[in-house]
Amino acid sequence: MTARRASAGLTPRVSREDAHRAIGASLRRHLRRKGWTVKRLANASGVPDKAIECAKYDVASEHWRPIHKAEWLLSIAAVLGADFTSPVLAVAQQGAFDITPDIAPRPGEIVATMAGHTAEMAAILVDGIVDDEERPRVIAIATSKATHVAAILRLAQPP
Image (cartoon, rainbow, N blue to C red):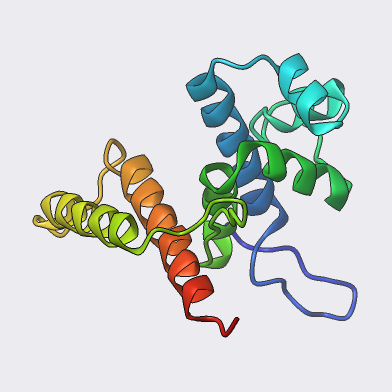
């Protein structure tokens, strides 16, 4: 989709429609996957339920309204985690991972988990195609790998 022109004649790299479409799709997917209601997410995130309800609609819907406060979007991301945030950031060719400083890294477990994920990813990607069914698992594995790399980097920090 073509991005709208800004007042200075500049065109944003990510269109408003694409950004909000990604937010709505990720909201719908995660509410459905977790079995959560909008009210439960509102209570957990501190974001008004009406804002969440309106944002989860497709941008073409008459019921859609954008989440217009950055702190609301970040609060939702804090509750739903990187599995929510990565598909939203994907429109900007970026991703997210959860930072879990409260978990003491255990190098052997980290490497074993990463090896298992590498094997699973190889099996998924052997055909060179990531279809709609595989996409959520590929994102989850990639996000998990990033989290594990962050844990290894924490181990490498001087005391």
